[in-house]
Length: 415
Image (cartoon, rainbow, N blue to C red; front, top):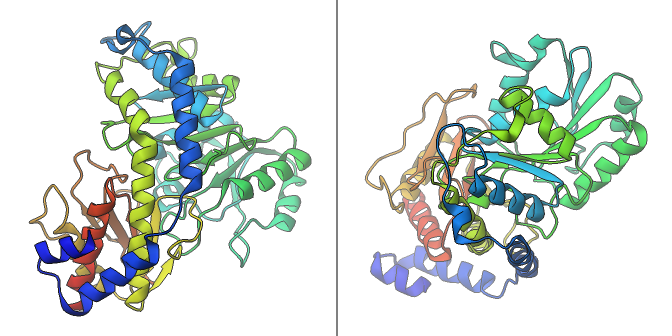
């Protein structure tokens, strides 16, 4: 396949050899967790027993929307949760996370992040923006990850015994931080520690970019709530919008009351005829995630072979769909983004330019040509213009397309 891509797109010389070597390094990588994930999703569909009439959807208030009900039930099964709320009106993962944090942290109590500073837009919503969560009277604290990139259990014990702790937050993925993502097993160890030290504290896990990558989800590991986007992993590249909150039923209802209105909670919310697409995307999601992981391994192998630091390494265990490549300068970031953009199915003729993005302190450079805007399960990259000038590559609906995007990006940098 790599030879065909190189021939079709005029890639030769050193770049062709590097691509062939990267393919040879990763061709035999196995993804056993994805086989089990796929079986879990198939089992959830068989157990749910959806019928054609369930997919019709509703308008207006959305009372008794069967498509919404079935989709949320499927999601709860797959995520190992008592209940899920998944709505088009929850517009992003950040929206879902902030709603959950606000619903679970009363004024006068403490919200503690134990995975360091959250990604830029979320920390802005917690601390810095007008009407941020701290303006409601909550206290916010952070614990940095250890030097090895895991949880700091000594600091966690001190924080849990300090009193007034209402909510503990974990961000699995790296965001724009030069650190590795966290596995479900690592999250489980931290959740167990919190439950032992502060039994009444609610543990919330940002699951964005991590769904269906491992066999288990954070809810299986004891998280009280998990939150994420429907247009990333779970959307299977076709979900048009939305985000979710899943976990303990009483907490999901508390979030629903915060999002909508007390007394109404999750009873309203039309699927607007898009329930069929959401359900189909969830059915396709394990296949898409596996293709994405295969593509990211190729990308890691290619750029490591060209002399760049990458994380994770090709063939190592992955816990999300993000590949970090340390490019070292804004000029390399620009060339990488321009090359990748040229391989995207939409807006390939555009040249990415850094610009201000709401919630980010630094200009951000992005390549995106997705059929669903912001759907980072589709191939994309983004990078804040700040040291160490890492680019974060996400997604890839097909392995072949991820390979092509990587080759185009590498060729642009080498040219």
